[in-house]
Amino acid sequence: MPYAWAIIGGAGLGGCFALYLVVALDHLPDPDSAGALSALMQGGGFLLASLAPWITAALHSRTGDFVAGWWYHLGCVAFVAALTMRLNPARYAVSMAGHGQLFSAAWRAR
Image (cartoon, rainbow, N blue to C red; front, side, top):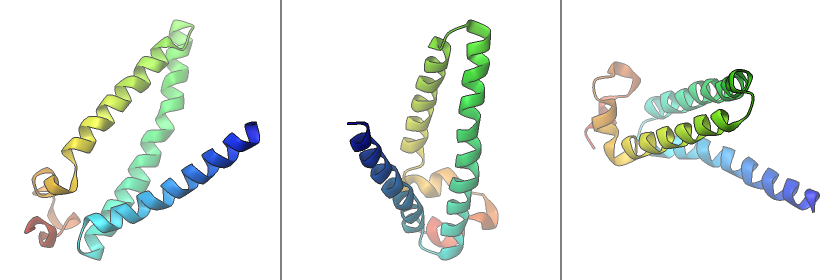
């Protein structure tokens, strides 16, 4: 049974990773803006994801158990859910307005 879960998890994670890269390119109409969003997702996403194990280990060292770590992860889920609602494609113009050349005027006019 562990092999089945490894295959299912690997196929799901591998497919989702490629899908996330494509979705970033589909959200914005011009290649420069889509590339900037993709770079932000890659760089910022991996940087933020790398902090979770460190923070969880620090919480475990201070408290002696993983309860605080689970609460931290629950807080992260709530934060990402709020960001997802705020940064949906219909609200890009509102959320990203005024960020100069990073996001071009082409998508703000949508």
